[in-house]
Length: 228
Image (cartoon, rainbow, N blue to C red; front, side, top):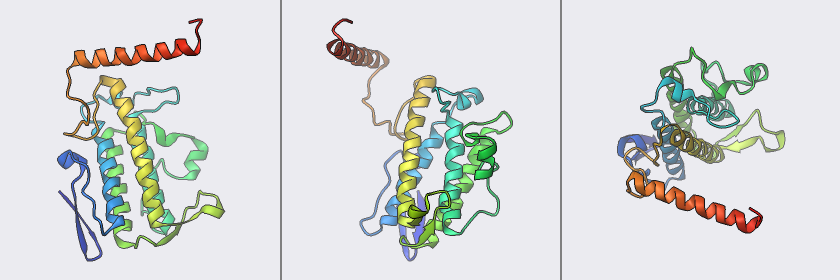
C-alpha cells in the first residue's frame, strides 16, 4: 500500500502494481481521488514494459512511431513541466529531452529511446518526475494557481485541480496506447497487474472471437459497398 498525506488527512491508495485493483477514492478529497487515478495510470504504463527485450520496448508499431519507452519519456517531460514549471517549481535537474529548446532542434526527441538510453535510465527519470509532481500535489491546495508557459496566453492560467485532471487524462490516454502496443508485440493484454479485466478464456476462444468481429466488420463493409 502507498500512503499520501494531504494536509492533516491521510489517504490510503491501492495502486495497480501493488494490488491489481482500481484505486480507493475518498468522498471528501477530490485532490486525493485525482492523485490516486494518476498513480494508477503511471504504474500501469510501467507494467507494460515488464518482460520485454530492449528491442521490443523500443519497437515502433504505428506509422507515427509509437513505442513503449517513448511514451514513458514523453510523460516524464510532461510531469516535470505541468507540476513543476507551471507552479514555479522547476526541478533542479530535468531530463535532457525536456524543454522547448531541444524540441526545436530535434522534434519528437521525447517520443523514442536512443541506443544509449537504457530502460532503467528512462524509467528512473519517470519515477523522479513522480516524486517532483507528488511534492507539488501534496504541498499546494487544489485551487492553487499556476501558469502553463507553452499554452496560449488567454488560457494559460490554471489551477492545480485543472492540471491534475489534465494529467490524469493524459496519462491514461498514453497508457491506453501502451495497451495496444504491448498486445501487438506479444499478445499480452490487461488493465492492471493482477487484474486483466478481460473474459477468462483460452486462446481458441479469443481466436474465434476475433474471427467473429472480423466477419462482422466485413459484412458491414459489404452493406456499405455492395460491389465487394
